[in-house]
Image (cartoon, rainbow, N blue to C red; front, side, top):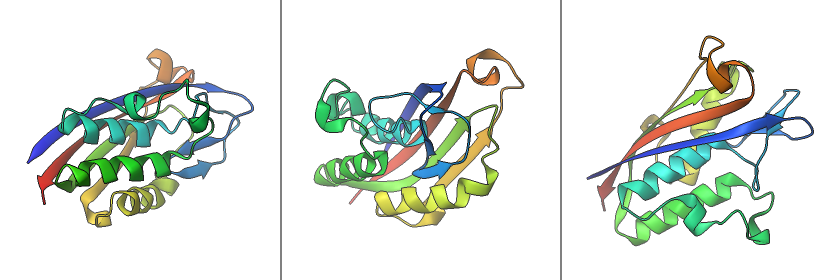
Length: 157
C-alpha cells in the first residue's frame, strides 16, 4: 500500500460559483481558479498522485493550458484515478477536511462523498469528508479563502 497527502487553497471572490466535492453550494462568493477551483477535489487528487510520487495535478492539468479553463474537477479526479489504476493501484480510502469559516457544509457532505466515490471507482464507505472552521483565525477564518487537506491509501490491485 502507498500513502499520500494533498493540500489545496483558493481565494474566495465574487462572481464565481462555489463548488466543493463536485457540489455547487449556494453562497455569495466562489473560489477563484483556472478550473472550477474545487479545493477539496484538488487536495484529494494531489494525495492520490503523491502516494505514487507522480507529482501534483498541476503537472497533469496545468493552469496555463486553455483546455482546462473552467474544467470540472470531478472529471480531473476521475482522470487521476485512471492514472493510478494504470500504475496498478486503487483507492483503499480517502480522508479529507475542508477548512472554511462559511458557508456551513454539513448539508452537502454526503453528496460530496458520493461524487468522490464515483470518480474514484470505490465504495462511499471508503470516503470521509469533514469540514471545520478556524475560529475566525487566518485567511480561512477571515473568509478570504477555503483550503482542504486530504490523505489517501492506495492499494495494489
